[in-house]
Image 1 (tube, rainbow, N blue to C red):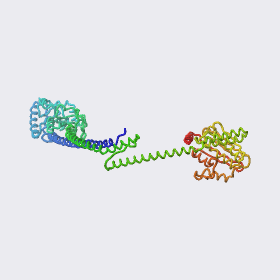
Image 2 (image 1 turned 90 degrees about the vertical axis):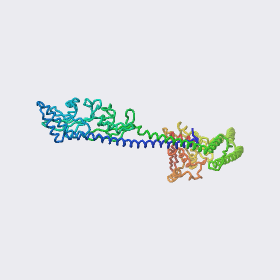
Image 3 (image 1 turned 180 degrees about the vertical axis):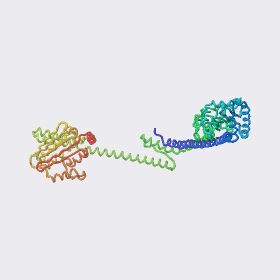
Image 4 (image 1 turned 45 degrees about the horizontal axis):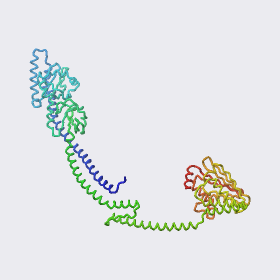
Length: 600
């Protein structure tokens, strides 16, 4: 259904207001979210950087202790003396106790200043040193751990970072269930190794996390590169795996516990561990969504008020156009008395006045046309009454022919019959195309009349096969050719004109017209061909006319107009022997359609 101008204007107004409004909301919300994500990622990275600094201090304590035990000369001497104790000596217990005192005294200078660490030194002779009680854990059990064999493949400057594991201190399993441990080889003597294992409580890292826990429900994790959690505010999560790529330096939006979170990862010094922060996405953009919705809602209220006012104005402005539409609709239904009544001098009012004036003018013109048509009808009636009915003429000629024939003059009756038939064919032009057989009948009548008129003795021989006789040809296209042969071919002897027609395998109708007249020489023939084939239609010599005003040249041009380039005409002649005209008329369906269009 076609919408009115008023409806289209109102819809355009609504769309022009609604689209920018929705577009503003989408664009502002998109860019605001992006900025907030960047800001939240930066904030989380700053928090992780501060946490990493605290963890680095812990790891510094471990590395300083490890380096002190490995490289301090006094410690090296004490370790060497402990390594060479003979376990079968009766004084072995006294020697071990004395070395414990010396090692503990040596380590107290550094460990008293550091966070609590669990230090284990294992010797190849199953002797060991620990700063914790043997009742809590037998350090020789370390050698049974799967990771312990990896220490043999480390250089003296490499450290094995074990990560988080259940504590081996029996008395602290309930309060501090996890430790974070490193291991290394610190000295080689007498073809044996000395192993150093240092552990600290995972709870120390958890305390760092709690210091940065904010109201945004942020979650912090210490993991390895595969996402295995070494430390978390939730102890039950230690040992589980985060199913994300924690090595990605860019922030990510991930689904964590059926809720979207902003994930940021940061590397930890010394080791290949990562600090991971997960902040609920709604905590980041929740406030901006509220502000955006409120702003859009307020804008929507004002835009709705503006839209209502604008629609009212559009309706008021389009009232004259609506009235004009009703008037045109009434005129379309035949009420020419309908008029539009508008006040004012604006553009639409002037259009209405012009429209009314146009209707007045049309009414006057219609009235004038009615008067003129009535006068014309009366004049035509008078002319028809004054005309001679052609049928009356044909009937009179037939009556004369019958009377002459009854009186015994059959020759004159035959001539009158030929004249009557030819006259009827000339006047009756309802069909532009007729069968070839009918066209040849017209030619026969014409030859009879020409023989009578000019005292000629022209004999007409016709050889047409059955398929060609029914072929439709243009009316009166042969008569000018026969007339030309009779008038210009006369050589004062009996003249014979042969017409041969045959259909060539559904391709074209071949029509050959030959006379035994005086013919023409080559120069005259070339002049004739040039005149017929190359001269334009408007250059035709008007004096060259036939019975019905159409010469040979006009026949050629007429056939070309109907059949186009598919029509061919060839003229051959020899002086003293006669002239031959060969027509090739196409019978292809395309030319039949063209013929039918001319026939209509």
